[in-house]
Image (tube, rainbow, N blue to C red):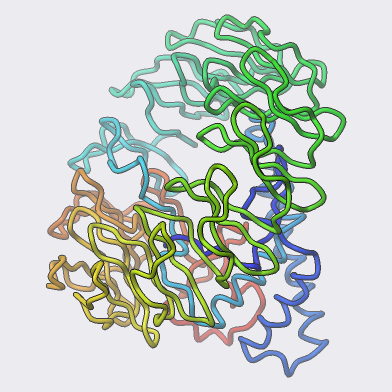
Length: 537
């Protein structure tokens, strides 16, 4: 489900500044926690509950710290260390509670999206799977073509996959044969024929034959993007070409990957933008610069947001409390807790008037007024009047709607094609959609006819991929690959491709864990708000 942009977004501390649609005032956390407590009928506990929550959040953050320690090498490689949980964790958890309290969460909020450019489950011949902390690879028939014998594994790219054995990383081919000996502390997927590897405390690059092309010499390093890789040497960041030559000298405190020929860089605590020749297009004068895929630079100054074009010309001075990204040529912006849309010239084309909005998708955007939601077109005209609890964008000609806590689908005329009968729904993909009846998920077609009976714990992949596969969770909290008829193609695994465990780790609990916030348990177990009688969400 597309995330609605509201005045309750939070700031994420990242290189280049906060994500443009994640900005908030510090006071928001306190308000959110208060509202959350009310929503879960714990307000009567007063200060005692607040103290208890604070203590349990602190305990929860110990889990995050452990995870951060385990991921230190990967963060070191990319240079994109995000102090996310330190800054925004409590607020995010509180916001999650609010959404549960108001009943606005559909199950799709918990799962990775399978939308966008990635529409094939099998982008290569094999995908990775994991069971009992061992990793291997299966094919489209569900056959384990490479046995589960590795401690970790990455997806195949360019015919090779990074795998870890006996604490060391190397690469294998699609037959499971060793292509590059496992001898590195870290190894990352090939991009443009080169892979970044960690040898000792330094990072360098190898080719697909395992030959060292760029000697390990960097304290941190990123993948090649737009033909250049950001690397850190002697505490300063610069950019190298595939031969290892510095094209832009190491001079920055921080440096982001290039996008559309442009990159955000930081000097003396301020951010700017450069091109691939190192020319300064935006002087380092902003608190944050976030590069969009089209070359637009979202800029932040004094907690206000604006944007500049790819030539560095400021189109909209920092004036918005929050903003999103350009989608379908329009950007969602917020002033005084109200949302509207501007175009690439900074012109307000849809009046700032809504309580919450989504980004545009295929010419429509969800907007909410007075706690009711509808759909508008790019001219700001209503396609669907705000009369639903929630409305999703159109997918294959149908949009998910929520009315009185039940979900169904409408067409672009606003006609209820599939009445709101379900306790949960997903977008249509490959002419099929997952729907939930009570606590189980099944599959319907665009006529609303049942294609697969409701037997699944959760539709992990959300949709059917274009190659006819989907990933679902079973009652044992394991994942299985199914075809369009519901036939189980694979065995049951803990992980299939990028779909990792999402359920609370407490025995007998089928609620979704707060994985995206760093917690392996659900909100009830995190805050001790259950007597053990947990039912499936």
